[in-house]
Image 1 (cartoon, rainbow, N blue to C red):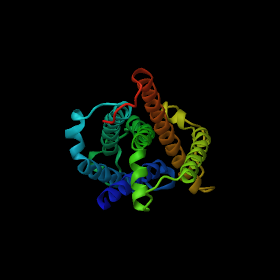
Image 2 (cartoon, rainbow, N blue to C red):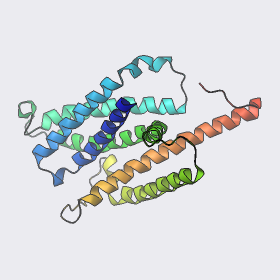
Image 3 (tube, rainbow, N blue to C red):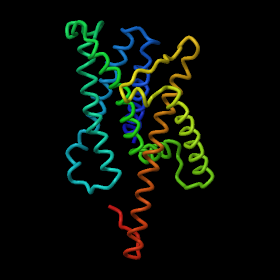
Image 4 (cartoon, helix red, strand yellow):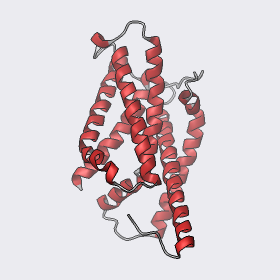
Amino acid sequence: MNVFRIRLLLDFLAVALIIACLAYWWLDNLSHELLGTALFALVIVHNVFNRRWYGSVTKRKMDATRIVNLVTIFCLAIGMTVMLVTSLLVSRDLFPFTALSGAFAVREIHMFGGYWVLLIVAIHLGTRWEVVMNVFRTTFGIQQANSVRAWAARILALVVAAWGVKSFSEMAFGSKLMLTYALDMWDFNESTSDFFLNYGSIVGLLAVVTHYGLLSLKWVGTGRYVAAYGERRPRG
């Protein structure tokens, strides 16, 4: 379980690095490229840790959660490949020998691709939220269910989601996903922490919506099974 905790910590670090890479105007170009390289190193580590999953994916019974998870992983593979290729083509400091001169369109694809990768990662996190919570409970020795704690967690999720809705608009995230230029640029001289909090809340919003959306589908499916057969759907 200690190894699994380390894996989970590295995954959250990868999310933090994606957000940090979006703060390009807060960093110099070299720092941006170093963070991006660290991110790709974590992606490689993540895939090494999860190499057995690729061999067992066709052997598992598919449900809504696993289907969404599979689709997000496929999309994430495409997104990270695009990010890797475009980063090499626009590199100015770490890999200048692979760069193209005047690659303005490639820079645009690289920039817009970063927002889509963040979106996909957040959805992927939502599909794995039960795993995250299980690790959290094990880490802090929480074994018995507690309704007060459960409702406190739900309220916290609601607060994060509400902040995420506000941040989605404030950061013009939808426009950035649609490859539309936003006239407003974040003023890092005014606040840096709010930039990270806003994008963190957007990740939280997308993860919460994904998690509870899939949970709702599971409840609906179980209800229909009970209505048809008079008993709960067997696990598996």
